[in-house]
View (tube, rainbow, N blue to C red):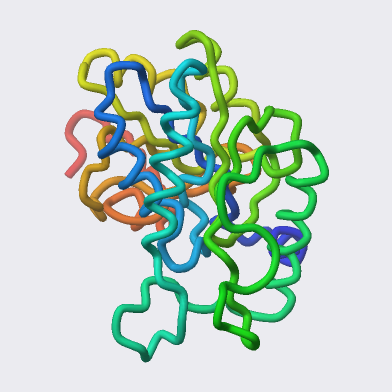
Length: 250
């Protein structure tokens, strides 16, 4: 809508849109750390983040281990009023968003994903408000709705892969391309994988936020960049001044 509104006057538009960010755990990653921090990168702001690490890609033979780790990590998140001490997840932004999250969780169940923890409804002890249960699905296949559509709530999907090539293919098999995450004990290997992911920014081993790096996405995640000199360039236009000065001209 923004782009079509700007078209008549040829205004330049930068879009920051949604995401369905993959988090690839390579076989040599520190799995307990990678899963715990992966849950944190997914559940931050109650999952209402366009760059949330919502798809955790793990070796097939370690999927059960990861599901157990993720369930334990998710269970530690206290959902309650933001004014209460110890609250880690507050409510979703609106009734409409709460309804969307519930609809997508229901679709995950109906399409055959394995519900590891959480699920439909509010957390125990909360009978009002737009509070969603911290939810983890495992054995999620790339064609499932929860693997393709942005949920925008505290919901993680765990997706198995057999080889590194499969992980890269699954990571790129989405309409979005905002952020991606790679976990590995081998920096060169992580960098090699990162270069092949179609995302505007890739985070290796959960680095701290760097607002000097460009932030923006590929595909349906938008165009243009924020932060650093790239963010400033969105507000600038290039101008060329050319001239010719014959011999003797002053």
